[in-house]
Length: 446
Image (cartoon, rainbow, N blue to C red):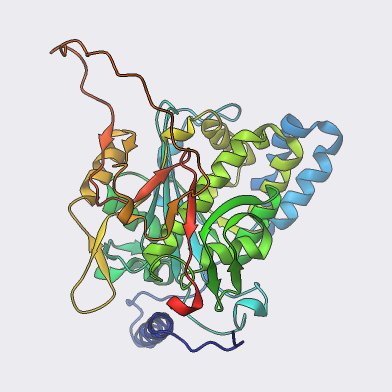
């Protein structure tokens, strides 16, 4: 196992993708210099320090509620000192009437964006000062039902082709960026910022997204440490020199950088593709969901504070999420959801001829309809061949034989329509109750 592995075709693809986006951005900036009407791109403007502190001042109330007034003043100052600049989403106008205490009323659509930016992340992930396009290599939409009875987490493949609506230029809010067609979704963050990614997902799925957050490498590490690590199952050895991930079969408690690298690994799981990585990430997220419900994290003041601090320090949030009481209200909406009704879904796609890109297929519209109609989903239990990066737990006991079911009475024609969307076999995913294991692969198989 050498320290400098030979780059694969996928790695060259990643580098070429960033170089192409960088060139596009440089050409755009040259055109903007000659023609002021052309939209410009660049770093987001930061809000004033006083505005940022004011938005986090509500943490006094939140911390008092969850950990007592004795530490409220210190906690509020500590959270305010670490909060990152925020971005206002166009969809935030729908948030009127959100309560300050208790579970949030109604449903929630929250977009989580994983950025590959190296800035401020240390040299372990590349040159932090290198000027590269910032890609959203992870794009996930969490939907919580109106009655908080179920939830779905939809992962969009990074190489999925999408249409991008006209977006406000994050550098110059008075300018509008042009629509784009058939571009990879992981380039949208670099093109138009957080709000543009949210608007793209809105257009794709047909649902409104009023909450969003961008997390960088160390943010994932910090959040995994804040919850005390996550127990993940490995069915087959994972060997990946690129992320330094080497795990034998069995259960491993991962936190910090080890958890991050487990989520990043592509070469060491499944078929080595991004689809395999998504399935591997669902193994981690379902294990995280089980942990949060089983150990009382959502009712533990110390753990809640640690999670809030890790999020504020390492994530850029939409301004709709900078009120800590709102963050708590969303967490409370998730607290009592049956894990069997928490679905982790890989957005259905098919490969496009002539390259590694994928495009939404016919089954994707079923996911959109389930989200729009606020329906829970069920997976085909026999569709194991679609779990690119996961496998059944080899140590699990076989299920007990069930008694024959009694014959159901004739259906009542006046009965309500079923409230579950049964997904076809080509939709990969799992529920939070399913204990799946990472299907690793060794260096010899790469």
